[in-house]
Length: 182
Image (cartoon, rainbow, N blue to C red; front, side, top):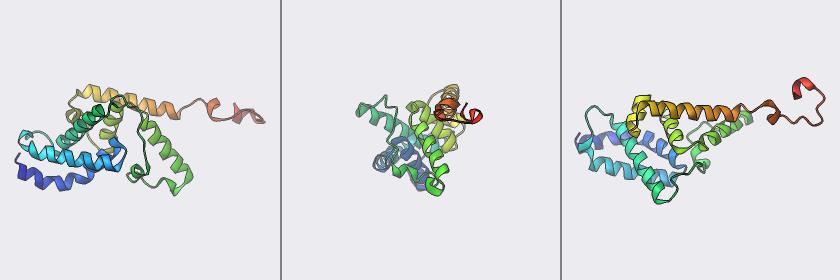
């Protein structure tokens, strides 16, 4: 692909690129910086984009690669938690619309934030960005089976976070009704 062709496509990609970068970095400043660096790198290397590769997937893989290098430089390669600040909530429906919905959204975001980075990124690409398993595998340059297992483990971890035993959710002290309190 020619640089001019890619430069014409990039503006349409920017919202999805920013959204992905925001989810993996956890803050607006790093996300914007990451998208800028990825766009520059993509334009510099446009000639490397194969005709059988989606330009969007290719730029996503550049974002992912730059972010991993950034984490290594910051000595946070094994970072398990992100500081999911208010800016990230802009990518999700307003959780304050109902307190119950807000709590559920916050719990989901917290559960996703606790996932190991490889699982979190695979889950975000497929579940949020709408990539197929194959597209996510191509983007991350890993086998499709690895994507499938990472997503499976991520979903299981999130399920476990919500399927705590009943006893741990309800206090039994001073309980009169044994059916409700267990």
